[in-house]
Image (cartoon, rainbow, N blue to C red; front, side, top):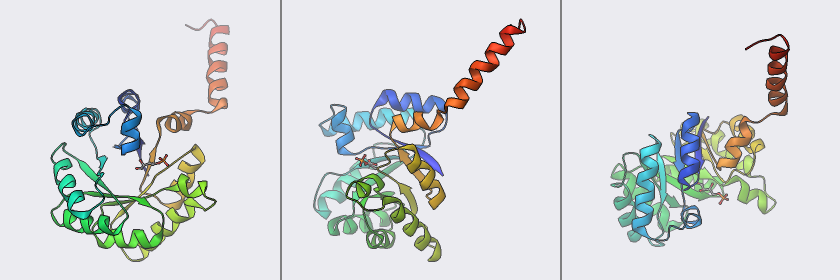
Amino acid sequence: MKLFLDTANIQEIRQGAKLGVVTGVTTNPSLAAKEGIGRREGYKAAVQEIADIIDGPISVEVVSQDAAGMIAEGREISEWIRQPWVKIPSTLAGFEAMSTLSRDGIKINQTLCFSVNQALLGAQAGATVVSPFVGRLDDIGHDGMALVADIVAIYRRHNIKTLVMAASIRHTRHCVAAAQAGADISTVPYPVLVQMAQHPLTDSGVARFLQDWQKAGGR
Ligand code: E4P
């Protein structure tokens, strides 16, 4: 399972890139707004900066509600960087846009996916990757990870090539469960990536090795 960073924060992306464990980045309008980006030009510049840091797929979301607008935005976004994944919501207009853009060879991240049916439609419409939103389903008392597992199983059974990206990840247990469910990718907020590295026994182990080494006069 590959790891993407779910952020539009350049510092977080630089930090993540230094670790060498991040393959791609997902952004969305809320994440962009959090970084004070509220305009198309600002979003474009930020996405280009991200693409300079991470040599992998960068997801950029459309904001139009109608298919024609999504298609126009998708075509524009696809020119911004080398590996764009245009994020399109799982709506009727979205599926229409996905079909048109995927026929043009543009890579699509089907976002805001909350059901197997939506994932089946996205696959037919040519989505490169589908993003089931785990945390948001958990928030309303559903089992978000069960959706990831169902989509993975059904895609495999029907030999569907669309990748599955666990999104709306809230904590490290989600990362483990996504890997167990067979997700191809998990897109994680930076604090969760940091937590993935942490274990108290690693910290105390490092401290003890150093102590013993110093006791023995080690340098
Ligand atoms: C995925 O691509 C989305 O950007 C993201 O995971 C949304 O998650 P949230 O529920 O934390 O906003």
